[in-house]
Image 1 (cartoon, rainbow, N blue to C red):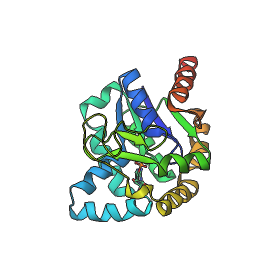
Image 2 (tube, protein in one colour; image 1 turned 180 degrees about the vertical axis):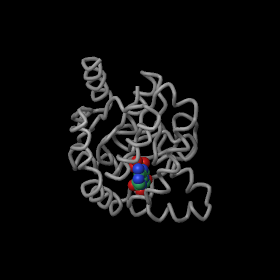
Image 3 (cartoon, helix red, strand yellow; image 1 turned 90 degrees about the horizontal axis):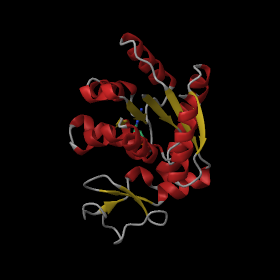
Length: 216
Ligand code: AMP
């Protein structure tokens, strides 16, 4: 099964991707994670990518597409995958369609996680991430047992630089201008499953499972 997760930042794409990965045995591919890895390497490219990410702007298509194609060429993706954070504009969607056509593959579902702005802002501004294992927490929705420390590996938690108020506002603006129209693109392909993602993650996941089982 090949799934795209679409939706604004803070809709819960990463969380749902992890749940889908475990439940269906799929590979989770997050272009945000791939880019954060490049930034962590501190190379010339990493420094350029960081500037876009810190502001909440989209990284140029060429860099993201190259990273994604490299990841999709790995053998583990044969068992199916969830794309989280890609595509983010019309050009990326067409590049993806063409890449799949070349391999006679197709996307099965595009799950559109729809969430309201106050919910998004509350989720993103309170998010904390483990500096080592990347586990996600939330200061009120899912606090770690010990403040600032990861429950899983004991490393320090940090706030993503693009989870600051100014970046969040810009990411939402970029989503509306660049990404939101992709729902129409996939609706026309009859692949879109719209889900109300304002609820707690486990409830949203149950709704996704039920919608997918009806489609099968
Ligand atoms: P995410 O982890 O999906 O919230 O992505 C974090 C940031 O990475 C975004 O705000 C963008 O700066 C960048 N990014 C992730 N995916 C893409 C993409 N498909 N195209 C361009 N930039 C991206």
